[in-house]
Image (tube, rainbow, N blue to C red; front, side):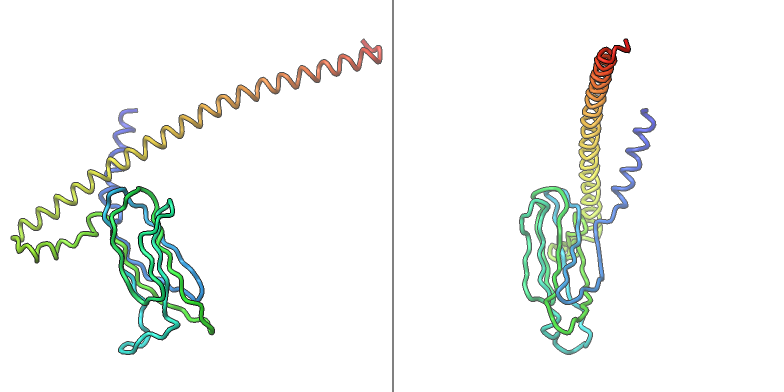
Length: 214
């Protein structure tokens, strides 16, 4: 049991280290349609996003048909970003609550229908911090910059381990609660079956007595 638990934690640590915390996406969106992208974010984590519509004719302005509305919300419905009729934009916020955050893109309705190509980059945690700008502004040495970047990465992994441990405890509590409910349900089903069998026996006994079979 101890070895299995140790192996489980080893796998979780590896997943935490190698799990993608930066998403760069390219997708197509047709006029009048909506596409949503979800991201699981820990509480108090910094997250930034940047999006833009690819211009099919470089050097020319995008037509009015190439506009989108963007909305970023938490799983409880709180709004963190909202933009209407834009061709590009960005957002940045610190997550107050843990869970799935949703970024929804809606293309303006246009006839005839057109297809928009959208580039979207969503960074969370360490990836959301622009260390290059920090180094440039403070003019720190290259070695100090690397140490700060590594330290921030280690802290992020440490927080991810605690987050995974909390999620594991929640799943264990849920499993225990489900097993307890199933046990009580089994006991109740057993007594119900006994009761039904007893009623059938009494019914048959009464029937045969009336027919003077017994």
